[in-house]
Each structure stands twice: as C-alpha cells, then as structure tokens.
Length: 68
Figure 1 (tube, helix red, strand yellow):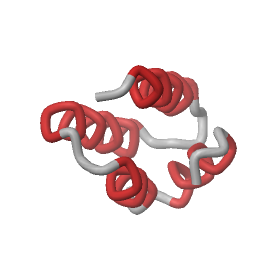
Figure 2 (cartoon, one colour):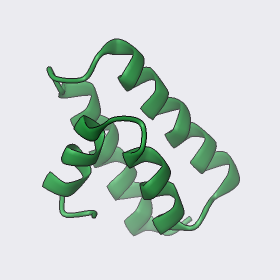
Figure 3 (tube, one colour):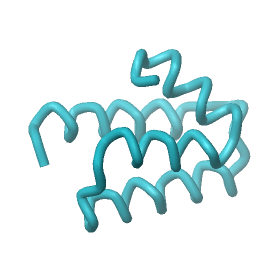
C-alpha cells in the first residue's frame, strides 16, 4: 500500500471518528471496511465506493476530504 493511501486512510478514520453526525454503528461499519481494505489492499476507487455506500454521511465526509 502506498504511503499516500495510508495517509488518506488515517485522515478518513480521524474524520469519521470526530463526526457527530454518524451513529456508532455507521462509524463501526466504516472502520470494519477500512480494516478489510488494509487486509485485502483493494483498488482505491472500489474501496471509496464501498465506504461511501455505508451512509450518505460517510460519503459527505469523503467528499469534504476531496477524495470523491
């Protein structure tokens, strides 16, 4: 996994964790997807698409970070 992707993942995790709009279940599901991606090293676009499908709020966080 590239250093750039690792930095993006850390930013995503931090912003999801800080979110007051996401439920604990949405946060947990997001973190599970992130951990799966670490393990499987999926294509970046596929990973972001799957993560965005968890909730429109997660999609908004990714958009705010400029990732989608």
